[in-house]
Image (cartoon, rainbow, N blue to C red; front, side, top):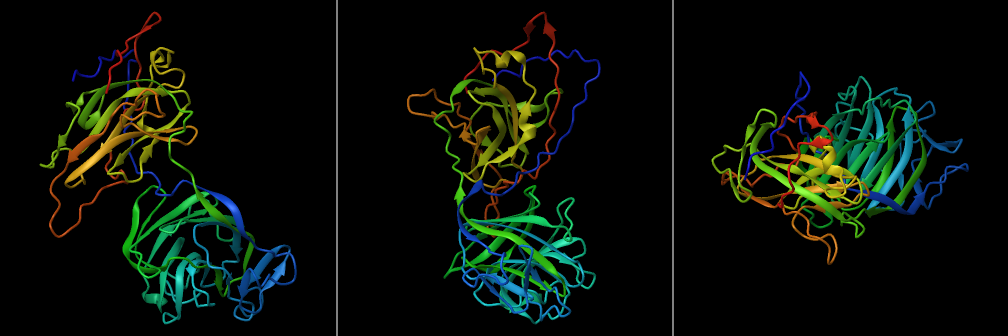
Length: 451
């Protein structure tokens, strides 16, 4: 292939911004459907068909109060849903007085009123037992949580010995302020958001006899924060608990979970595209710190290739939300940094149209082992995810460019399975701003090429 077009810079000083290409969230694209539960906190007691409660709770001003009396045990430490849920989105508001020990909510709990409020993060008694995923949103000085949120995979053994991890609180979150929590539980994936910000996505696997046996957890940036053996029910109740705190729960609903299709919309139409270069070991486009290679199989089995990169432009009949890549059919990884400075000529009707956009998609490969398939993807403003794999968006439509590349990494050790990074954990240098010399109304512009 020919080298990337010559770029004439008209700015006296030009600085390249080095932007880490972090991974995207692991959260699924879902939305709420039909309501399955809308808790009634309007009377003097909870609806026994909806909520099973430890005695002593109170209802006031449309909210459920636990631990409000002089004795936190006598004023109800635990309530849970009567029904066990699967494939749902739960939403509720909660806050507490941040007095002592901890408080939070439980997912995939069983149908008892078990002691999910005890025995974790240094709070006695460590011999207490429960079932479910405990999410401690507050921990006082007598716990080891500090300003973190704790997640424990309670497995009916001693809570203090159950698998657990902690995460920093989302920025601006105060457990003492009334805050909305949402949980999207699709079976093998659970995403928890606090105040509209993703806290964690838990991915479950190894389903056996109604229980998942393994879990990985990722923070909002896609960084792995837990990987281990667990025991988690395939479906379960939702619980609220406190240990020596006064907590308030309101606006509690559970809705059917609907996954948003990532099938390209039949209304999406390709306007034009150009593939200008395919490179390896990309660092900086202005200095030529990369190697232009032929488009085709890439052999990185000697460990010498840290990334591959696609450079070009494409336009549809609707705006582009973001560019990304997909490895071995796993969830696409999108990054706003992959959108590159776009020349005016790209947006002409004869090229990409008004929504034409230049891209520089950099795919980290340093951790890929063995044979892998990589391709570029585009997310449109309407939510459709379009794979640039040479197929047509609709029958009879113009075919998309084909960016599918077979990449071979070093052989995986015999004692370990192949690992495929989907979290963009390699840091790549992205040149964020580029100026192109205008000669009158003309622009230095690369002619269109096919992929």
